[in-house]
Each structure stands twice: as structure tokens, then as C-alpha cells.
Image (cartoon, rainbow, N blue to C red; front, side):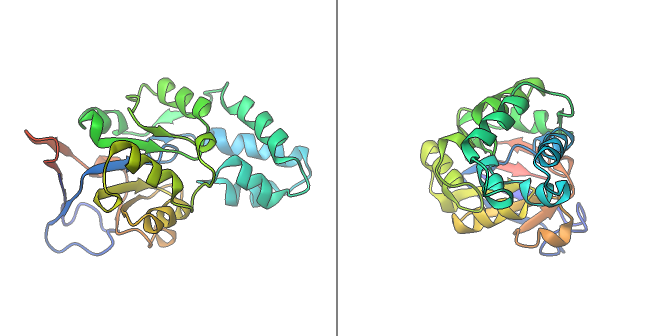
Length: 234
């Protein structure tokens, strides 16, 4: 499987591309929120209300919540609260609302173009929340979906991405991750995987840990070859 990145397709590419670059990989691993699904309005509204209810600065909470499991966010900003009880309350809200949840432009077409055994989603949301958002945006449901409530340690720990690679039966070094947060990029590096950052949730200067950077998914055009491991991205 090859990923070809075109020079000039993205002026924020890291490194700067003066000629085409071809990356060989076995599978693509996607983050969900901020990469395939735009849920920022929903996430920030939920955390804002929660923070006000507990007399915590909403800006401080939202600043650390993106890309992080709910339980770990609560442990960071409100260690005096019961994380289990707060997680249950927040997940009940997010697993029952689609207001402010949208498909990222180009996500559906991209995923549908990929062989089913050659991609997965690794998310910091629980399975109920992830499933709702995937179904609501009419994205393909992956064969491998690794969720926050199925692992012990969230991003930046590599557990989620390593779990996905294991379920797909692929060497972590053969994986390329598509991420939108510094935490996710840290997880990719810790897992020994290469990464492509999508700008949007964070500014590009906060995503420099990525091997490559694109402005959005529309910058990628996927062509599947005759063999499952022969893909090209332009």
C-alpha cells in the first residue's frame, strides 16, 4: 500500500514537499472526532455546561478535553469529583444527542474507497458515543473500532492504536495514523507509527509532531489498486 503526497497540495506540509513522496504502509488508523466527524460544537457545549455546574472555568476544561478520554479529563480538572459518576452523566448526554455533530467533508468518500480490512477508527469517545456519531453522519462502520471504554489508558498513551494494529493483524510500524490533536500525535509516535495531522481543531504550529500535515481530508484522493496493499493517495 502506498501513500503519495503531492507537492503544493498543502503549504503547511511537514516536511516541505518539493517533489512527490511515497509512503508504504499496511493500514490507515483514523481518529474519529475532528478527523472524520466534526463534533466540536457538541463537545464544547457539553463540557461548558458541565464546568459551569461544578464552578470550574469552562475554557480550562475545554483546553484539555479535545482528544482526551472523559475520565482522564475529569481527573485532570476536577480530581475532587467521582470520575465514574461524572463520566456516566456526561456520556449519557453525548450518547443521546447529535446536535452539533457533522460529517467532515470528504470523510465518507474516503472511507468507502478503502478495503474494509485496511482501516480502523481509534477514538477517545465511548462505544455508544462513537457509534451514534458514525451512524448519524452515515460513515461506514469499521470492522475494527477501538473506544475509550475498551482500553485502560487513553491518548497520549499508545494503547488504543496498538490495540487496533493487533486486531488488524498488522505490524505497528506499517500503520499510518490520521489525527487532529497533539495527544493523538504523541500516541502515534509512542506506538512507533507514522502520522498525518489534519489542521482544524488545533493550529498547525501545535501539530508539528506529525510526520506530515494536511489542511483537511479533501487534500487526499485515494485510489485502491488491484491488490489490497496497493493504494495511492494524491
